[in-house]
Structures are given as structure tokens and as C-alpha cells.
Length: 304
Image 1 (cartoon, rainbow, N blue to C red):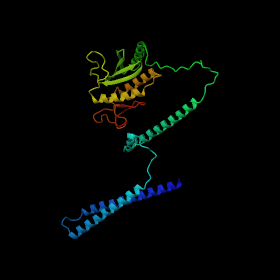
Image 2 (tube, rainbow, N blue to C red):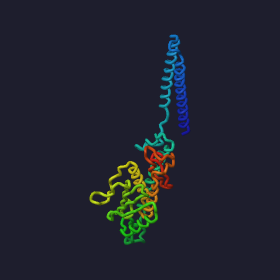
Image 3 (tube, rainbow, N blue to C red):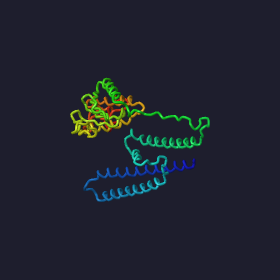
Image 4 (spheres, rainbow, N blue to C red):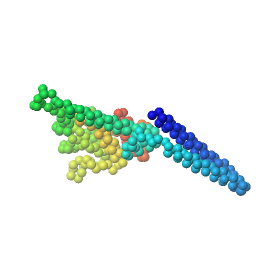
């Protein structure tokens, strides 16, 4: 192992030395070209031929150094520590500094998931080999799994929870548009309105539109599918959909719904809040459409 590390270090040292020589020869060529501009246009032919000869020699040296660098680069050990993860490997090519660690974090998550799956398979194999004690008998009562009833809640209970949310958040106005399925219209401080489809207390779909856009179809039923014609509200719909998946707690649906509503009310000053990172109100003619999940701070889509 020590010999392998020594060979790798020698190979890297030779490659670095080769690229330094290549950079030096290229710099000399450009310096020669820069000095050649000072030669008079109607100067001596001998000086012109000498200039072209030196330039040709410099370019030949660049070619030789480049071939030498290619040979040294071919001798470098292949980096196999990070296997490619399909299109995810393209994240490692992102030139933005604050996003360079995302690929490594994704790789660590994949490694952790693989280890967890191996441990689970081993645990399942070991548990399957353990025989139950005869003291329990064949008629022992089985432990029932706790049932999750967050999708089967009476409409009256949902109405009372929605009423408490409407009274608690002053920036939100909540109206029930339909009972089966349960559809809410939430108006965020005259900024926009959101159509929220609930299954019990679990959020299934959210569409954000402007306050003057239609929220019903021709038959009078709530329109839960048509996107807004404005790009800013289309972007907010995408962010809201992602946040809806974040606030998905089947065991505590009421708390999840209240947290989601609290996050949604952070858009009450959409057009008058600057970006937390760049400090600008508009970027690409759009206000900060993203809201942080913890501090509820405003960010542009490219600044988050």
C-alpha cells in the first residue's frame, strides 16, 4: 500500500511539473507575440524572418510540452472512490463554489442507504431464524399495527380545524369551496390565492393563482388543475408543491397543516421583500419566489 502511494505521488509530481512547463512555454509564446507588435510595419525583412522563426520555435516547444503532459496524465491513477451516479455525477461539474458539496452529500446519502439496506437484510435473515417460544402457543394474540386515520376525518372536525387556522393566522383567509373532496381557497393577504385539495387533513394538491383569476370551472366546481397564466405564480406553485411534500406527517396531520399554513403566509409581502442573498427585489423580472423552510426568508430561485 505504501509503494502504491509513493508511485501515485511521483506520478502527480511529474504531471504537475509537466503542466508547469507547458504553461511557461505558452506564456513565452504570448510574450513573444506581444513584443512582436512593437516591430514597425515596414521594418527590415531580416527582423521579420527572425520573429517568425522564433514564433515557430516557441509553438513547436508548446506542442512538445503538450505531448509530454498528455503522456504524464495518462500515467495518473484512475479515481474510483466516487462511482458515477448517472446524471447526478454532473453535479460535481457545477462551477459554483457553494454547490460543490451537494454531489458529495448525495453520494454519502447513497452510501448510507446501501449500508442501511444491507443491515436490514442481515437483521431480517437473523430474525427469521429465531423461533418463537412455545410459551406463547399458536393462539397468541398478534400485535396490531397502529392505524393511520389522517385521511378519514369527519368533515365537521376538518371544519373546526380550518376555522381555528383562519382565526389564528391574520394574514390568511380560508374558505371551504367543496366537501368531497375537501377543497379550500386560501387568500394570502391580497397577494395571491391558493386552491388546496385535502384528503382528510393530508394535502394532496396546491395550485397558486392571482387574486383576479378564475377559481371555478364552467360547471361551478373548483378548478384544481389549471395553472396560473403568470410565471411568478407558476414558480410559487412549484415551490409550494415541494413544501407540501416536506410537511407530510401522516401521524400528526393537524400540526403538519398548521406548519404548512404558517409557511404559506410568509408570501404576504411577495412583491415588497428583497432577496436575502443578493438584496434585490427583482431578478429576471421575478420577485423572490422561494421561502426558506426554517427561517421563512425570501430568496430568488437562483440565490437559494
